[in-house]
Structures are given as structure tokens and as C-alpha cells.
Image (cartoon, rainbow, N blue to C red; front, side, top):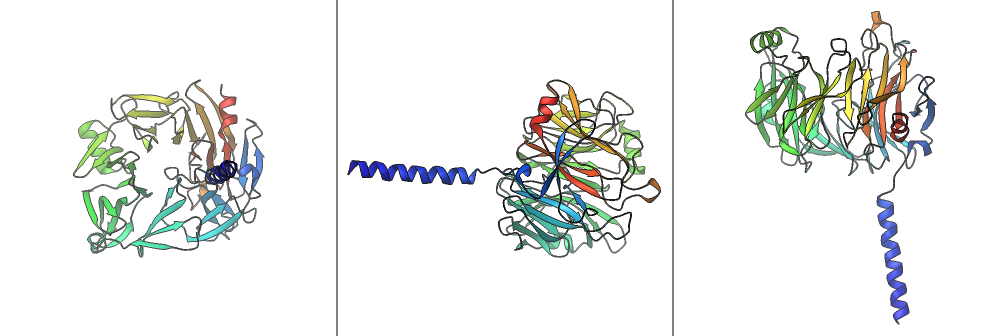
Length: 414
């Protein structure tokens, strides 16, 4: 009897262990038929390009604030355009889902606002100004589940031009921060910020600005705090603010009823700010041609200390690894335009060395006929820091999506 009991216990333990291992299974692009190997001819870095669709079609990673891939590596959300910009046969942008376990790609409809990807629980949330807010579970991606309508407090004010620049959710995933733009009947824009309860549709107004407050993103560990941008700070209002205060007014900490400017203290310029994954600070890009050695800066929330985190000249967008040891950066090495030359760097903060994920790519399109898309590489860490995802321009009018293993980049920058 004891031997039977031990046998049953062993079987139960084995079943439990198998279930645990299945739930933690990791999927790799190297093993998927959806990807093919690419080796950069200059740096030797190995990446894996998504080979879905025709060779001419556009494949892009999401905007760098939103992680494009789940932590287990099974699901990848990407933007897709059938056709080629230079050949003028390009179709509308679609939002797609690649399943690396089954090597299947699903079309999830027109791409609107940048969605929120729940990387651990494998689903996404997104909004539509005309229909409301929705969720799709990646295990059943063809089913769209309605969450709530647009709050009447917003829809009654006019036409909603923007619900959120890129959606972010509270830690319990029950509420969404919105940085809305509403066009009134008089043709003016109102910029209103607040929190939407996705379960009840209840609207909580945080504030309103007379300037374009966008790129809003909730702090990953503090639901009461958002980071927003005065992106058009170069306009008349922004210049007037700078003349009065001395500070370029790009980065703002926003709480309900209050806003606080974070000045870029070193060179008094900032762009494309992003929270650290731990919520303890934020980083941004400064103008590399003004201070060549100082391009990616960091602000510590607790101490207010600002320092250089990656000395790569001319950085445009950056993202830090979950442990903040590494930074990825895209750079326009010459003159910038929509579809100009790009390259992407991996910077090791522990050694102050960097390597190019891919070296300079020739322009996607000529300067006199700039891209209608947003062809910046937007590199960011995915799969809990195992890979970097980015968009790679090709000189023939289409873009590729790259996944680059991080282990090799660490080894190359020791």
C-alpha cells in the first residue's frame, strides 16, 4: 500500500512539474519559421527578421513605449502594410499578431492608436474613438471583447481626434490613462487628461492644458503619476514659456490637479522620454549635435539627480533594459527626415561600450518624397530583456522587423 501511495505521489508531482514547465515555456524567433537570420555586414550582429507577407511589404514594431512582444516570446504584435511606398501600391496599416508556437499570423484589423500589451498575461487593450475600448486575448485573437464606451464627458465636447498617444494601464489593468485631443465645433483643440475605468466607463478628470499634452504614460509602479510631453514646445506658446522661465518645457509629471516640469538641466532640451521599468526614474534623448558625448539622460525621481546614461551621439529614441544596465538607441547619422538614414546601437552602461545592432541603412525614401508612415526604428527591449525589437529601413521603400538576441550584444561590449 505504501509503495502505491508513493507511486501516486510521484505521478502527481510529475504532472504538477510538467504543468509548471508548460506555463513557463519560452519561444524563440530562431526556432520559428516566421523568422530568418540576418547578419549585419559591419558589426556582425545576428538578428532575426520577420518574413511574413511579400518581400516588398512593410513590417514594423510598435511605438517604443509599448512593448511589442509577450515575455514568454510566444506572441508578437506588429504593424503591417501590404505593398511598397516607392511603388505607390501600399495598403492601409493593419495590426497583426504572430504566434511563434504555431507560426500563425492573425490580422486584427486596422491599426489605430498604439495598444497596451499585457506582456505577462498575453492580451492587449486598445481604444477606438468611434466605438470605445476593447480587449483581445492572444489565445483567441479573432474575438474582440468590448470593455466600455467613450465617456460622455469627453464625447459631448466634440470630435475625438486622439484618445491616447499610446495606451498605458494601471497596475491592476482596470483603468487607462488618456491624453485626449478633442476638436470642438469651433475648430479648436482641447487637451484633456484623466483616468478611465475600463470596467465601468467612469471618467476621472485630472486636468486640461492649453498646449498639446501628449505621449502620456502612467508610472509602472505608481498609478497616481503620469509622464506627459509638451511635444510642440518649439511653437509660440513653448517659446514664450522658455523666455519666461528659462526652461524648455518638454517633460511633465502629471497628477490629478497638478503638473510639474522636469527640466533637462544639462542642455535644456529633451525628446522621447520614457519610464524605467521599475518606475524609479525616466530617461530621454538630448540633441547629440549640441553636446556630442551626451545623448541619453536619466532623471531619478527620489533624488532629482540627472546623469548621462548612454553617450551615443545623435540619439532619437531610447529604451532601457529591465535591470537598467543596458540602453538601446536609434540614431539618424546624418540629416533627419521621415524615411532617412537610420542605425541602432546597444550601449552597455557597465563598460561604456556600444555596438551597432545594424549599421547605417540607406534612406527608405528620398527626402523630396518623405514617408507617410513613421519609419523610425523605435528599438526597445522585449521578453524581459532577452531581445531587442526594432524596425529596419530598406532603401527600396519597405521596412523589416528585427528581433536581436541580447546575449551576443553583452558579449560584444564587455
